[in-house]
Image 1: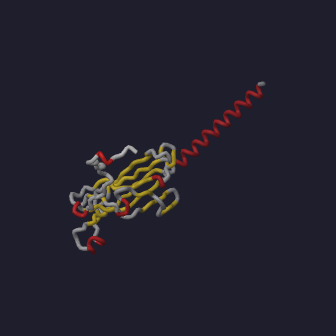
Image 2: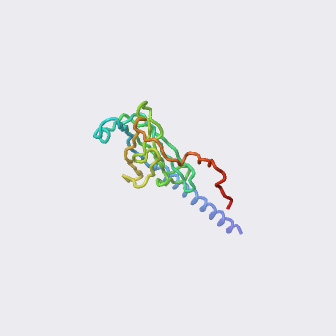
Image 3: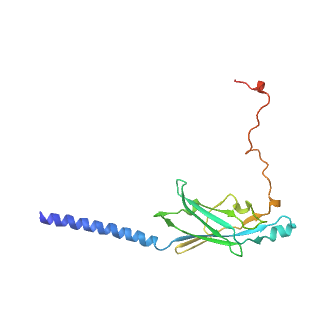
Length: 185
């Protein structure tokens, strides 16, 4: 009877050690700091200039806020981060691949413009999707434990260049003046 008890205790200790070892391997894998880099540029386009200046003369904006939001498969936000652009208009966000023990799927991450400190060039445009957001599709670079997405340039413009929304989708439906035309059938 004593031998059976010793064998059961040895088996329990071995399974416990195996379980702890597996957890340590998972922690070590997460400790590698596997990261996702998201980079891009923010520019100001001024439509008041000539065509060549408008197309080729976009100027970098310093201090613009760009955000990345990642969701899980149930569309819950699992990560939100933002970065300010430097003098060249460049931004780079670094996201850990594992948050709270769950792996982030870059295909469920969106990058978008948040704000511009420039008093003149502060209207977000949808050139390259900066206003509505860009989904991360294909990585530009994959190296060891790093994946990098370099996005196209995002643009702000001046209020004078902003195109007004003329659609009737957001307005209230017009009430009919004559109720006699309505029918119950």
